[in-house]
Length: 331
Ligand code: FO1
Image (cartoon, rainbow, N blue to C red):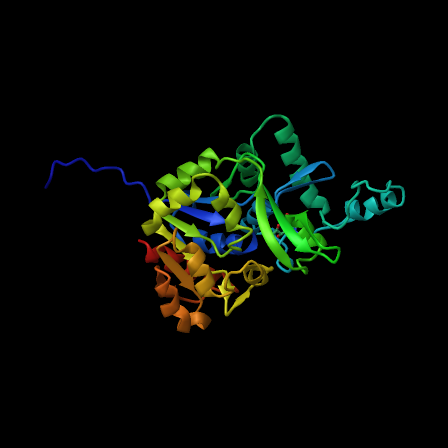
């Protein structure tokens, strides 16, 4: 017998540095892998955010909310399932009268009728003076998402891509590159435009989390904007023993999107070794897929430990097992 009072135990908390689709699938697995999803905070990239039709659109935040709510379109990986497109179709009427040079009524970025409600709500709340952190929390509560979802910043930081689009190199916004140009043009540089600070909620999560996971998202344009915020790499470097990265590159290719081409075009190696080089200063472990098992030694030569496990989240069970494995590496 002891007279020692029993201390209340706080469950270990987890911060996940997140982009869109890959992070959303990982978070779904993580929720299944832990006892209390309330211990999870996703710190979400907002460098892809854009304003169209006067509406504030945050694609990565919405992709995570819709995925975790079970409402994502499974084929596209973005937008809502069973969506209709009547508003987009109706914009066609105005294309004919739009003056030269006007950007009104754009139809290259598809906003479904139900999805529009999210952008209406976000835009109205921001106009009332709410922060993106507050609005994101309201939106995730409306969708019964059981984890904390915090934007990387309450300030605007825009990912700007220099592309070679025929008429020579010039800068475009991330969604211009990704959607309008279908990420089909070479990229010669990426920069993050704006003076933005890490959001308070994101800062607290990074400082206090027992484990930090870098989700399997594009290292340049999804994780990159978060790392570019003042102080983030310093916090991560200080917490390196608690930080594990998951490679979004499998067998030298990205599962979705242009990460592999982008890495090569920007002078990195499009392989797990290239990802290891980028993450070695901030993570003590890199999780790679079994198809890359023969590169484990090369990953470790970059100065971090390597764990090999299936990372292609084609089923919820694989995503859950990936999440458990990732947590165990830095337990
Ligand atoms: N991606 C596309 O490829 N085409 C689209 O028209 C498109 C519309 C869209 C609307 C809302 C939203 O939340 C996401 C949307 N996306 C679209 C996906 C988005 O551009 C990308 O998933 C991310 O920005 C990259 O992480």
